[in-house]
Image (cartoon, rainbow, N blue to C red; front, top):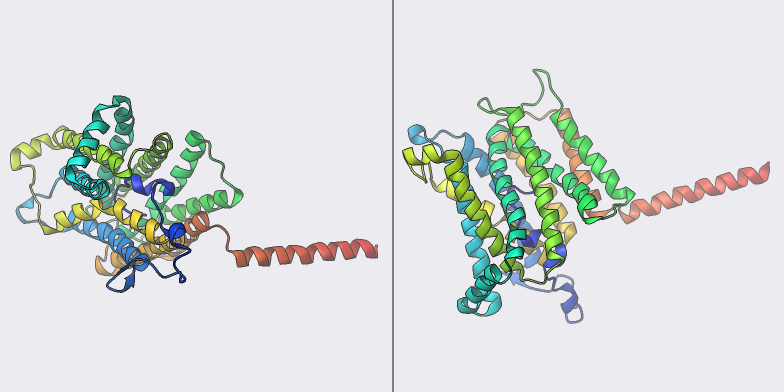
Length: 378
C-alpha cells in the first residue's frame, strides 16, 4: 500500500528468507530475535513501513503542489530515474554483503547479463512496467489528495488477484473474492461524485479525472508487473539481489529514455536537475527504499503486522491530508469507503478471524438443531 515501486523481494513472499523456522528451537520467546537499540526488529520494521508509506505520499504530494522558487518544478521523469539508480546501488551493496565482496558480486552481475540474454529480456517486462508505474504515481499525486490516492491505490490488490487467476492459474476462495468485492465497493464510495458540500478530492490546480486515471493505471501496471515477476521467480533460483540489479538497471535505462522523450525540451532549456531541493531528494530516497522496507517486514515480522502497518498508514495519510495539507474535507462516504478498504485488505490478507468462524459455526449448529427438533415434533 505504498507509492514506492515494488522490488523483487516484495512480490512473492517465498523469495524472502524468514528466520522464524530456523530459530524456533533456540528461542524460547516469540519476541526473541534481532534487536535495534533493544527494540525487537519486527517493531522496528513495522515503524519503518509506516514511516516510509506515509512519508513518500505526504512528501511527494507536497513536492508536487508547493510553490517553487523560479517557477520551475522538478521533472517527475528525472526523479524516477534517480530512484531507479539508488535502488540499483542498494541492491548491489546487499549483493556484496551476501557474496563476501564487491569483486565476486561484480562477476555475478556480469554473468547475469551476459550468460542468458533470454532471461534478461524477460526481466525487461516488469522493469518497464515498474518505471511506467512510478511515473503514473507522480501524476496521480499531482492531481489527487494524498488521502484519496492512498485509499484508491489499494485497488492494486484487486488487479493483482485477477491477473494471478488469469496468468498463474491461481484459485481464490470465497473469502478472498468477498474481500475483493468489499474493496471495490469501498473505492467506489470514495470516488462517487459529490455535491458542493462533499469531500474535495483534489487541490484547485489539479485534475481529478487525470489523477484517477493515473492511479487506476498504476494499479494495473503494479499487478501485471508483480504477477509476471512471480512467474519468473518460480522458474529460476537466481539471487534476489541479482534480480533487483537487473530490474534497477533496465528501469534506469527506460527511465532515462523517458526523460528525454517526454521532457527533452525542458531538460535542454533548464537542465536535468531543475527544481531539485532537499524535499525532492527525500521523495526519491523514500521511493527507492520502499521495496527493501517491505522485505524487512516480511523477514522480521509477519503478514499480520504488515496488514496492521498498512491500515495505520492509510489512517495517518488521511489525517495529514485533511488537517495538515488541508486539501480535502472527509465526508461520510469517504469514511465509510475507507473502513471498507481497511476491512477488505485485512480480510484478504488474514482471512476470517477464528473467533468469527467459531461464532458462525455455533449459530449454524443451533439453527440445525432447531430445524431437527421441529421436524421431530411434526
